[in-house]
Length: 232
Image 1 (tube, rainbow, N blue to C red):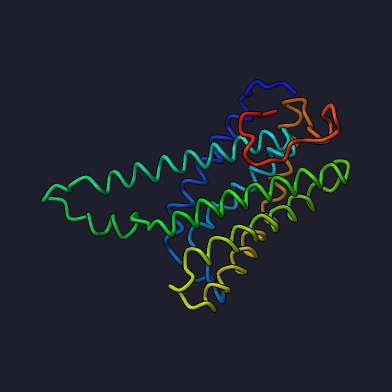
Image 2: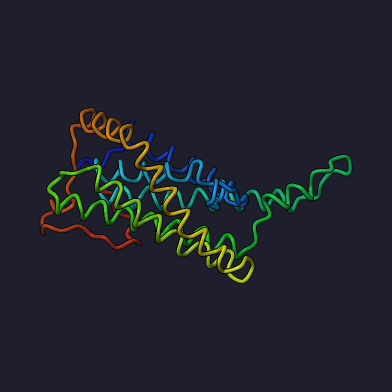
């Protein structure tokens, strides 16, 4: 496959990183949606999974893995810069230090939960999407997108909430957050699926590309998460 970064791929990669960073900044707020509890990050976080599906469908698992690690790195850079800003001494005339620390002063525990959950959930989503495409011979994109998101979001929630809030919030609340987040984000995927399908179809036509991850010389693809040196 051509290793050049095309404009559509770069746009997807940039949007993936933006939505990921914004989502993690919004995760600090717990919201109530009728009978369900969730975090404010659900406003934008599912979009990263939708973009993940688009990249796997058009460019394959290798490119998706590259973008996931890129998003991980960009999020880490943002977190470090925010922590640096918090550590700088505030001017006496500025009264917002405590508010800024409350919102952005994430504990190491929260950061560990966020980074681990994102990496595992995104990789599982990409893996399931890739494998299902091969097994279905490229058919049933809707089912593949929904199921891969359900798997990825479930892994994300199962990792994030116990690490972030276990022992802090009641376990009944943690369990509610786990299943409600996975369900809400998957429903999000279903609602925007018509848009996702049109975007994927457009990019395939624009790139003249439709990657199957069993098309290598040995009929297989390297699914190891840490192989960030290869993008094809």
